[in-house]
Image (tube, rainbow, N blue to C red; front, top):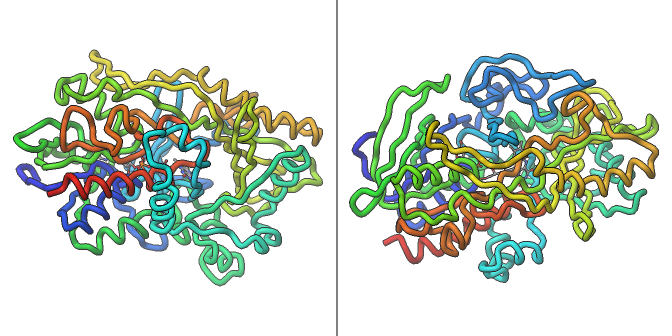
Length: 497
Ligand code: FDA
């Protein structure tokens, strides 16, 4: 409520926000999270919309769905919906659509759960100021434990019809000389076995993922946020969007808009906080910081704020297999395998073998590639609209396409198969206009000090994916979690008294 004063305010309840809340609360600090999405709860049925035919609950404030795989047989599968504070945001940032989770738990509500610790050599190259011994001995293990990361039973993987698509993806990759690896996940793999045996209600095996899982997935409301709530020291205010942070006395005044379920502003509130933690995600945090600097509210922020944004080299692509290389009519929505071509100096790429659970065998192999695309964008304030945009151009994804092509051209030529040209628009091979992995905008040790403290305004911190310099080579949430664990440990020890 307006006039309240809180010791610690966190903007956003995704990975960075959830870790921050838990560790502050455990240190005895009353902590307040402000989240613009709704609370989806931890109930087990009837909450989330269906994957194949999403209603308003699927999308954040849109009047039309925006499916990531947008076409089939060249025809758009999108349809009108009611505007609602739904779970998945397709945010258009000029040359790219950035997909993000909305609600208590952020991206953990909608993501594929792939829980990958990055290659140590590349991590050291990306963030040379971070002590990597400490990361790999303490903070990555701590993050993996906190998130509940587990692995698929390889024997079950080999035998179940639900991963035929992944085995076909592996077989065709290996025949072209590519290496494949199992990928850990936060989906409870024992639960999935029970689903397959008909002993538990289906979630992954019912195709649930990008609009929420009713069962099986250990999203943040079931892990970090549940632990944080059990301290009794954390409160979460939902359907409130932070719009302004300005210095006020020894702390900051934080302005926010309360919105209704159709996105309309119903109230504006201002509270004060001793410390403010930005955890609104790469795009959310960058937009706020760039606007606050440009509007003169936080004038001392570094010029590095808004710089170094990347899409983690994301590119999607689909191949048509021969009729004798079936992918199965039954597919788990949870990916567990990737093609690892990162050592290819001519174009490093790691491609997740993604499911395409359409209910019928379509012989389609779908992939989400993470490439070492070196292109970066920057967030810029537009003084005539008062909004922050991103400089990223569609053509900046061409290096990523070229890197992914080194894998899939080779597989197609070896197999005598072709790309599907009907899934990302008519006659379009590459899904290059979207990312699931926005990273950067407030890079660690550039826009902030080596622990996420923003330069120029003591008591302001960045705790989310904006700290990561645009690329990681693997799916990002384990790294975002581990960096937040590392930074908050130092902040609690040094700044919170
Ligand atoms: P995150 O985006 O999680 O949280 C930010 C929160 O802040 C959101 O809840 C948002 O609503 C809120 N917010 C934003 N602005 C605000 C404001 N002004 N006021 C109040 N609240 C505000 N990664 C991975 O490692 N493995 C995977 O398998 C996948 N798969 C995947 C699939 C899909 C469909 C998506 C969209 C994403 C993935 N990801 C993924 C990516 C992963 O989910 C992502 O990297 C993390 O969620 C980012 O964590 P952050 O803490 O940075 O922000």
